[in-house]
Length: 119
Image 1 (spheres, rainbow, N blue to C red):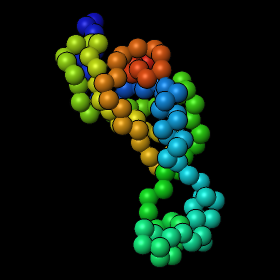
Image 2 (cartoon, rainbow, N blue to C red):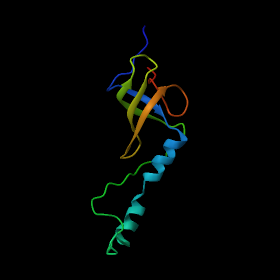
Image 3 (cartoon, one colour):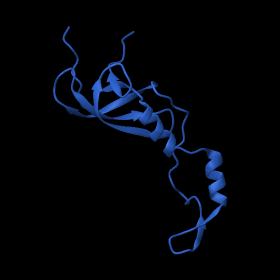
Image 4 (cartoon, one colour):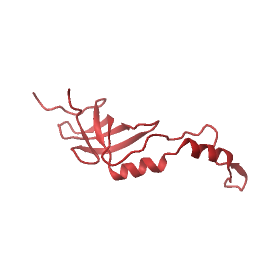
């Protein structure tokens, strides 16, 4: 059997790095945090009062992540046409957000992609 070649549209596994975790955690909030900001007032750039959370704003909410967690990643671009090509992808997190990754190599450590195992 020949080696699989990554291609656009394929789903692979992505392993989070510590930097990924920091980025995801920084932009996420909680329902409680949103509720508090909906009732708090802040000043806009002109000094006028506005609510701390704009109506209709998108909130990133999801379960906690840690380095080494594995999530599905949809390949959106390939850099080469070999089994070890780097890829860009959208990582589907356990929440309502995704993580865009670029130039990710195949491997087993943090910030790498791998093929799902077959049962």
